[in-house]
Amino acid sequence: MLAQLTQNSVPVELPQYSLAGLSPLIILAVGAFLLIMVRSVVKRLPATAERFATIAVGPATVLVAWIVGGLVGDEMPLANVQSDVGTLWFALLFALVLVVAGLFVSTMRAGFDAIFTSGTGLVALAAIAELWNDHHRAAWPAEFGERPVGLLGNPVTAIDDQFSFDGFSLVMAGVILSAVVLCALLLDEYLRRERIDGPEMYVLMMLSAAGGVVMAGAGDLIVLFLGLETLSISVYIMAALHVRRSESLEAGLKYFVLGAFSSAFLLYGMALVYGATGSLNLHEIRLHLASVVILKDAMLLAGLAMMLVGLGFKVAAVPFHTWTPDVYQGAPTPVVAFMASAVKAAGFAALVRVFVVTFGPSLNDTGFLAGDYRLDWQPAVFVLAVLTLLVGAVLAIVQRDVKRMLAYSSISHAGFILVGVQAASARGTAAVVFYVAAYAFMVIGTFGVLTVVSGPGDRKTSLDDLDGLAARRPALALALTIFLLAQAGVPLTTGFVAKFEIIGAAVEARSFWLAVIAMVSAVVSAFLYLRIVLSVYLGSPADDSEISEGPAERVHPAAGLAIGIALAVTIGFGLIPGPIDQLATEAIPQLFASG
Image 1: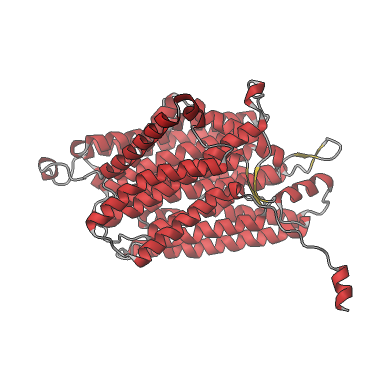
Image 2: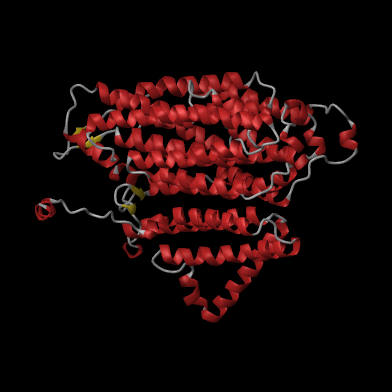
């Protein structure tokens, strides 16, 4: 009997996996593991020892990133430089870079945990950059001349068709990892000031980022759900980790309860989609819908609706936005920066991958258009985009707390990105990528300034507290003004280019009314940002002695670096948007080709 069962058994095929494709996740997981293990053995190093250990992280980051680049790519980075200048000079230059990295870290005066987390994010970014370069080299060898537009190679497989990196997921993962680097720098001084210094926040942030990277490259609904839960659970704890503030505990609990509710919707939606298509793999679902006409698609439509509810919660789309103002106001300000950048990027990556690609247009075996379910979900996204744009813009202007104002502003920005999702086209998706990348740096810079000015207890976040900021801290006031004007869409900033791309995609998709509503929403939101700017420059502080006694807000070098990088990106790529636009444009053809 046993022999017969053995003969009739179906051989199990082990999934094919690639360490290169998994490298960003491995780096984040190893970084989180090492940090928590070090801190579990040594709670607090002596001041001198920790200072040298922190400085050593700088050269170690450069060295590990160089090694990881060689392991992930075809050759070690800068190999051509080595052959051009010779091994001796290359070794001397490399040693000089390591010394400069150590000296640079020492000037930031940040703690070991923050520098280690930023270093881990930079190493993971190096892996992403190498995967992107391989993605180009595999598609069109350099000796063949300029690569034709739209020609891209196959995705970088991580685990069969369950998880892979195409151009779209590489850019989105890069945005998430950039948020890790900058938010870790913001966290250092904040945690010390609030007397909650420890490795927990950094470990949770790396784990959450790993979940976001999985969401960006997921090829299966179960993998997508696992990534979302990894991201969400970590952020729930981060929001409630300021145990000395009741508002933080309330924010974490509210976020957790509503998040669990939305996850249930998402899971039930996945179950219904499986019942309608017979698969949870996004590529197989797309192929099935291209070859089979579902006459009674009520189950599929119900599944799409429930999945839209679950993902709509993550991106704070109206009417699934009710958690956003309270959580943004109560959570630690650097955590809000991470939520508004990395979590939002992961949520929109999942929306695009599930709806625009899987349930968008595809070709059947005969080459004709089939399986196009855009008309089934586009109206729902249209309504969500309109509600999100208007509710976010209108309710923001009646708030008095700046963090609540920016929470509703974040909702309005989510509405703009939904306009690009609703277009369901290559240009619309490229506009989504550009907007997500631009907004991430704008919002991190904005909340970075608020982190500095919020003061002990994280309570000085009302408009009254910002009155006269220009007199106390003109540099901070100028940076905050630029970030707010960029969010308003003022020219020569990335915000203007992002809004222009979104509205252009809506017009191309013939969603004229949606484009008009988006422009009206932008005008209404401009009043919000100008209101804050007027308070900063024309408002009078409650106590004029604050000005005469000198600056009240001390900018920590690490926080100043994070704000400076965000400012440079916001202005630099606003003046020269070509590089980001090219990344977004080149990322899209492979996404639609691979499904």
